[in-house]
Length: 253
Image (cartoon, rainbow, N blue to C red; front, side, top):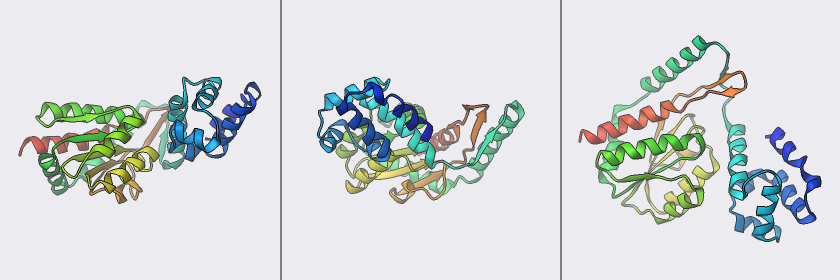
């Protein structure tokens, strides 16, 4: 995070006075920026949304959403465990993946999987919530569940996900996927869903996360951060495995 913010600050001299004001706020309040939309930020800073968008472009991003996405990844990274494997050895990474698979399967509860499948069966609609590296997991699961006969969806846009969370009801089911269980957007959606009495399932890669405190049913996957040099090779397949078993249990009903 510090390196990223320092990189942003190095462009300060290229900005106008108003744009510097926006940048300074981002540098001091990265967590708040990640949780805000462009209108909220403009109101907070007493500037126009165009000024914020222009600032983001001057910093090298397509717009506010692009910068916010990048910033959120660094915020999430700061919350992740120090449990990682740094090695250039293929055998080391094979062993890492094997352990992830074994530990995830060993901790799976058939009773909880059946409970999740019942929640799917009793729901009117199923929505998957995931951002960043967890999004492809959600897209794949939503596709499989739709082909199994239960209409479901996974969306990429954060603001659209927020709108969907506000639109779901107690007749629907939300499945939230997050490696850390601390992703700010996912926690925001979980709070909205809880207020609307939407049934919720969380699939997370960490124990004792804030997300599991906000949902009805939680599944834990085992994921170790894996690096090849500086390249992050961490996978999300343990999350996918859990969702696959839930969908299989639903199909067998």
